[in-house]
Length: 376
Image (tube, rainbow, N blue to C red; front, side, top):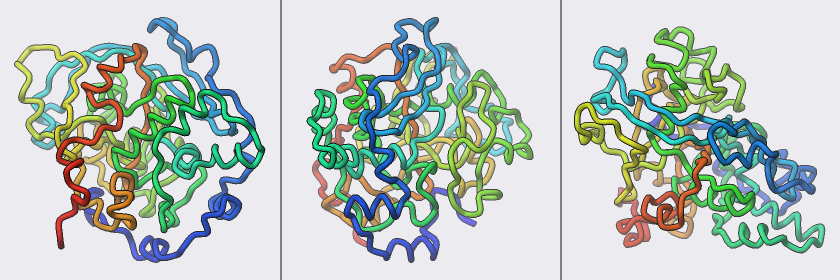
């Protein structure tokens, strides 16, 4: 068995990758169960709970995607302080999880589950645009904004690799692709969405706990809360099938690992002065690799699913991209990596978004290299 971050596609996945797909809208919908039925009129905004202005007003809400029947649930995460990282005596602890340090984060909403193919494919395959054309509908102002966001070229492979589509987590996207999706989602809904920072992710995962997992220290209970190597049957599973954490978030441990905004540095925590409380930390990326991935996956053992466990992205995930260099920023071989979205209560200014690279801005080293994969 290998770590989730060293895995290669299985024989069945490789076989699936060789099967060409018919990319007409009707055949696509039939093949993946998307169906034209999901692309019917819906509302743009969530309910009144989505319009909170203060933490006291924050409640769970459901966001619907206009022109479709697809929606997703958001859970309020109160602002507060926590001890980030793991204690030296925690079983499975790695050196990059210390030293522990106090962190304060502002309130935000977080996706109740990982982003599913149902939602991701509306953006990646332009299903909203195609349905609008079929129905001969004029685009709304938000449609025009969303249509202007760059989308990936259609891949030549089944990016689910036969593991399941409807209700399953989207995988195999780069961090850049996940950020572009968030830009599209922001334009489509009028609510500002982005990836979580590493600190926000761990804070939400812990949900007020200080143990190795959000349910305690006993890894024997993990099957009740997570999909991991020992119970996943070597594939991802539908989201939301296990128990949630104390704040109502599903699959924070396992199923698919999740992109965060931060650059990965093994010694990042040591840069904070002892005893200080760090407010909303973010390690702003300066290079394309490595970036932080959190939560562990269906292909990982229990220690990699702990709340404090940190993982790093790798250029090796891009070696089988079927469209290099045409779609170099969108596809990966990472069958174990997906993402979930957050929405900060305080909307950042355009200047802050740019300075902190909340949106999809390629770092200098990536812009200078049309094909970052080394020769093998």
